[in-house]
Structures are given as structure tokens and as C-alpha cells.
Image 1 (cartoon, helix red, strand yellow):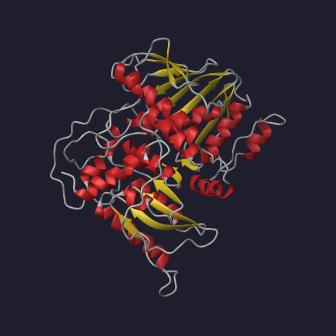
Image 2 (tube, rainbow, N blue to C red):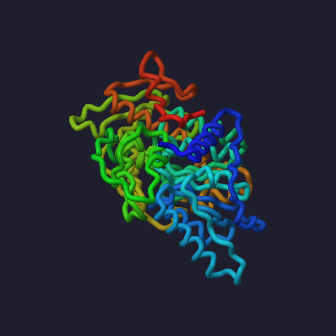
Length: 441
């Protein structure tokens, strides 16, 4: 049963997500924090689990940002984050200078603060779109974890909200800020492997419907708000372990909240494939079902240029060209030209690129840190390395691959219109039902 205050909060988000609507300002004393110093962006963190806590740790030492508030439905997590922020800033502050970090259970209280410039969203996937759209409508710049969107329609709504409000949006596809992946993509873009017609992208399998048994919910967790737009179901600690977990919680393995390995690691590796071939504003044109008995790998897709990508088991990306082969993963890089291993992992790829790239080569956007690049983009008001449109296109590959796993059917796709082609597919696969009163604008 909802309290009147909960209903007011839900009305806030419903209003904020309507096309063209600005978020309502809550009538509560939310203005305790000091205004931001000059040349410093003020941040709010929404979702302080393992990933959110890691992103918080990356921001606290920086002089160009200041964390003013954190939000999490788990009281232990948000209070631990609050203490961490206050310890980091308080130890270097003069007596009475630092006013502290505010902690909220409901993200809408944080978004209502006019003194927060930008937010970092690291919630479960099923919350990304609703929070990001509300944040954009509230005038906040956004860093949102990958996979950016839980459905294709959510991703496009996120793009529209970000563009309408002229916001800077960085997707947390951090491999675009890693040298081995940028080097691999530049080598492919410049034809060093010759014609590449085949790629194996190895990540985990698709998710399943949640069938976890009921456990007794402990005080301090707003389980109804954790579920949000997802269907009502009893609490289970596998979905949201109390406190700060040492592992990544397994909510991502269930369709209601995540996309399994296909979306989790696929948002990294499939994204790199998109970058390597210049498909940041496009995507595949056809998907084919798996023939593997366990249904955990084997879905593959084709681009208009003939490139075929196959989802394999394992982890990593292998590009096959008619003049060589390249394998890349985090901290791993192996380049074969012909039958000979030309290069292995290195700290600096500049000599290799200088040797192999042609005169006047295609060079890609250079970022060495995903958070730093986001802050740079907020300053310049230019697109970051993994803008919202880029995040949408990569998430679309993940979400369509899962649709093929779920249905067992192949499909044809029109990436320009973002719709199924030639009578294939089902438009219902592009969206999902939202538990009232939550809705997508």
C-alpha cells in the first residue's frame, strides 16, 4: 500500500516523463548543500551498489566535481556512501567549511535539487530509462551505466529527452576509453586486416524469467521502489543483497531487470564491433536464430555491408580478415598478419599504429578515462566518446539478439527507422509493460 507521500513522488515522475514536461519541485527542505564552487560540477549519485560505489570512488579525488548527494533504496548502501563522501571531503576541509552529503531513498528528491548539475546512474537496467529521462527533463547532465536501455523504445526515448534538453550524456561503455580496443578499431577501420567479413563476439547467455522464492524482507530496503516499473514480486536477496555487496548482484540474469550476459558484456563487446566498423548511428539489418541445443549462444547478425557477427560463449572479440586476425579483450591484444603473430598486448600502441596505419589514416576519438571524458564534454558541451545515440545503437543490438533468443525466430531490421522489416518480428518485442503508475513518455 502506498503512502500519500509515495503517491506524490510517483506523480512527480509521471509528470516529469510526459513529453515536454519539466519535473515538479518537491515541497521539502532540500537545499542544505552549499552552491558549487567555480569550475566545478556538482554531482548526485543514483544507485550505490558495487558499480555505483566504484564510480563514486573515481569521482571523489577529482577537483573538477563535487558530490552533493547520493540516492539508493537500501538504507545501508546510501548511508555507507554518504559517510564515504563526507570522509573524503571532510578530512581536507577547514572547520565548519564542509556541510556534508545528503542521502535519499527516492531518486526524485535528488533530481529536484537545483544545485546539482549532473547525475551518475548505476541502478539495475530496468530503471535506466525512467531515471535518465527524468534527469534530462530536470536539466541534469547524465552518466548512465551500460547497457543504456532495457528495450529499444526506451533507448530512443532517452535519446529524444537528452537532445530536447541539450544535455551531455555519457554511456558507461568504458572499453571505448581503453587503448587496446581503440587500437583494434583503428587497425580495422584502416584495412590492416584486409576485408573483414566475420567477427566472433564472446559474452554470456540470455536471461531467464525470474522464479526466485520469497524471502523475508529486512527493514531499511524500499523493495517496492526497487521494483519500480517491473512486475510485483516478493523480495529475494539474490536480486538486491542488503548492504554493499562484494559481487555484482544477479538481478542482471533475469529478464524483468536485466538482459543476461548478452546485454551485460554485450554492451561492451558488441559496442566495440559497432565502433570498429563505424556503425554508431546504424546497426544490423538481419538476425538469425541459434542452432545450439542449449540456446545460450549462436545467434548471429548481418550488417548491410555483409559483415556477420556471431555471439559465442566465453569472453572477448575476434575479427577475421582476409589478411589477418585480431583478438582483443581487456588487457589482451593479439594481432596476426597472415599466419604470423605480429603483436601481443602492449602498454603503448603508438609504435604499432605508426608502423601499420596508412598515410592520413582514420583516427578515432581518443579517451583514456570514461568519467574524465564525460566531465570534459560537460565543460565543452561537445559529445563524449559514448554519447546517448551510440549507447542506444549498441543496446539495440543486445536487445534484438535477446529477442531472437526468446522467440526462436529470425528477424529483419531497419536501423534507420528502428523497426522490423519484411513482416518479421513483433513490435511488442521493442518495449515492455510498466507497472502502474510508472510509464515511459
